[in-house]
Image 1 (cartoon, one colour):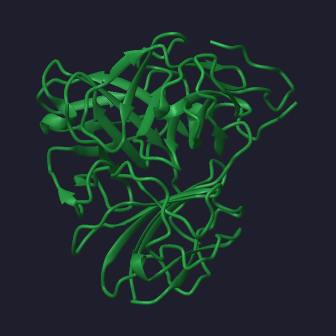
Image 2 (cartoon, helix red, strand yellow):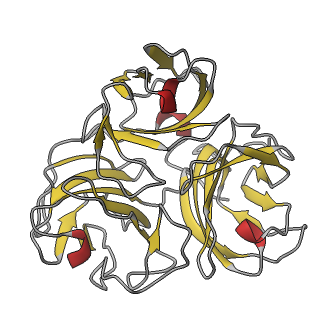
Length: 344
């Protein structure tokens, strides 16, 4: 059985539901007794259309990127206004705090902001966590391919990178299953492509990741969110759909709290589920990272003690295609003491 170094995933990842007030609205995580100050908060309105808001501690509060758009950073003084010791505060921005509207926030902890060294380009700012395998980096391009130290100590499996200032640019996504010669776009539903040199045909290593000329344009400010597999906590893998209502089972080594799936060899969107939004098996609300659409409920999947099982032949996530997935844990399948968790 698999063991983990993280017995309590809620110390590093939180899925949080809240209702808007229309005025300053402080949110405190109450899912477990474990406090967590987030360094990356991703918010989406559930009951109506609206953009996905991504705010991180490196760029600072009020600085917003949108997973569904190629916009540069927007300064919005009424979006996320503070990161708290166990939560965050939102202002009056309608997309994160309309009165009586429902929202979901996915929150990750990084935290280390000194001691990073190596690579041919030094980030302007960063926040990393070697335990949970997350790195957030802001850097200024120099016009040619560079290596950037990530400080995670293991090989990253998933990266989302985009220009954050000085002009719009689509999100470029690396997934280890596709490798360093292929690319996906987070704000679009495109299939995998090889038309843009994003990773300089170079896979990340345990010390650096490489970006090509399209992601290091001279004097352009870029953001990178970099993730590594952590046994029992996070997994970035792939599967092949079977086109059947008795769908594929995907082993993760933990009971998932959050899942995102994308077909790679056909045009499909990025679909997202979690364990809080109607997260019980047989009743799952989905959101879509590349659109503003509202949440839709259906019998899509079951979150099990050691992975997830699909219950639909829909081509979005279980057609006869190849898919990648990203998942974070609610509980490890087996903790560090050898005790297994239960299914939902």
